[in-house]
Image (cartoon, rainbow, N blue to C red):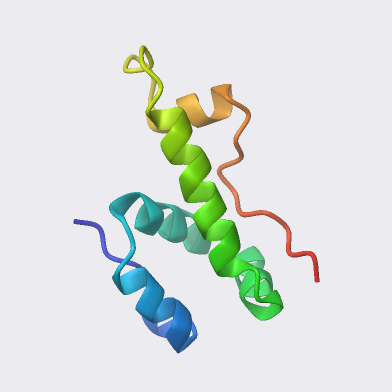
Amino acid sequence: MQQPVYLQKYPKEIQNFLKLATPLMIEIANRWVLGWPEAVTALIDSGEYLEALENQEHQEREILSQPGLNHLARHEILQEYGLSLSPPVAKS
């Protein structure tokens, strides 16, 4: 099972949340923090990180549950549906 990377760098609230997160959510959190660390920091600072992570997980789960997409890689499926792999830009 995948573990959150850089867990100690998150605020305690987010650390506790990620310790109980689904494997898909941990995968998204890891992808974001490894690929876009500045964007993750901005989302945390603005208080939008958990909401953005939950929204992304919900959207990815909905898309990945669609039948007939087994011939594509996960990132290809998400891109085919227009879902960004990167985190959203913080509003604040």
